[in-house]
Each structure stands twice: as structure tokens, then as C-alpha cells.
Image 1 (cartoon, helix red, strand yellow):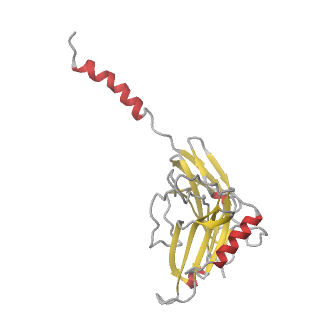
Image 2 (cartoon, helix red, strand yellow):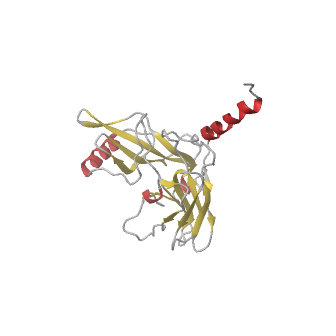
Image 3 (tube, rainbow, N blue to C red):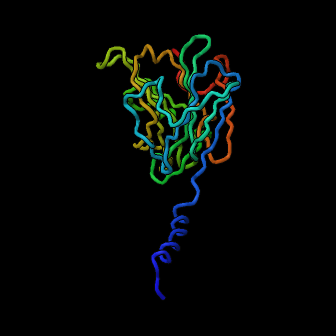
Length: 260
């Protein structure tokens, strides 16, 4: 039997369609309902980590506290609802910028996930926690350690019996030999691993951000971290996140930087 060009090529086409996928991955719609929150200027989403827990883009050494680099911004749809129309599937941390209606000072609130510090480790969700004794022991270790920053504050801890990760805020606001009046703030994820009957800090850390700015400006900021805004899973189905910015008089408020 004589074979023609068309009889050879045509059977290959369905195979290629099967391998490559016949339909594109659908994007998802995410609505952030901020309720009675006042002074909101931006609602954005960050797709920080790849599947292995590596940052999708390196930390920007020229980052500005009031102009964060984000992966998507929401559109204000009225009634304090902010909408992302076409977010690709993934897990996102939401970020909200606002102005304190009473003081006019800037406000930044964002979510996070406990990304792996060591290879092949799993993510811990932002709502992960640990027992009081472990929290106390790790906090004491951090206090006793020497740091370049004069304020090293463990904000949240979460993990299991083998490993605990810590979201830390590190601030240097004491005078230095660099630009007069300059300070730094950064956030990192540290890991403490249970070894030989005690918690030992891993040398490797994950840096979320690092910002250089005037100390006078830093002291005006509210920069908080809230687990409710972290690890938002987006698929093809619509998602609604209800959240309200914490009030200054609230008894329990998210941890982070407050004006000082």
C-alpha cells in the first residue's frame, strides 16, 4: 500500500493536541469584600512562591514601602468590593494599602505562607501554629542571638513536631555610618528544626522583602501581617474573601509594625 503525506501527518495531530492540552487553563475571579474598611487605596495579589518554595522573582533592593511590586491589582467595583477578574490558578497572598482616616498615616496589610526553608519540605499554611512551650523556647533563642538589626521581632510561628517556621520582622533604626537618618526593615521566614532534644535554627532563611528608608518615615507606618490574607487558592471557580482592616481600638490586632 502506498502511503501519502496526509495519511502520516493526520494521526499525529490528535496526539499532539492530547500532549499539549486542548484547552487553556481557566483563570479565576476573586472578589475581596472589605466591608466597612476606610481609606483603602489598593488591593493587590502576590504570587510569591513557585511549587518548590522558591521566590518567583528576587527581592528588590530598591523596593519602596509605599509602592510594592505585585502580580495583580484589583479593580474597585463599588461598595468597598475589589475584584480580580482573571487570576491564573495558584496560591496568592493578598495585600491591602490604605490611609488611616484619623491620622492620615499609611497602612499596609498583607498575607503570607510559611514557605519551605529546606529542600523537599512542605509549605505550612499561614494559620499554622505551635504550642506555648515551643514558642517560648524559640523566642528566647532569638532574643539571645546577635543581629545587625536592633529590633528582631518574631511575629508568628507555625509548624509541627519536627520543624517550626517563624515570620520575623527585623528593623534597624539606630544611627549608622551610612545615609544620615536611614533605616531598614525586612521580613524573613526562619526555620527551627528539632534535633537531639532541642530546637536548632537552620542557617538558610527566606527573605520576603527588604526596604531602605528614612527612620522618620518608617515610624509613621502601620505594616501588619494577617493569616486571613495568606495562601488564597485560586482555581476556575469564583472566590470571595471577606476582610476588614483592623481598628486602632481593637483588642486583638494583627502583628507587625505600628507607628512609634
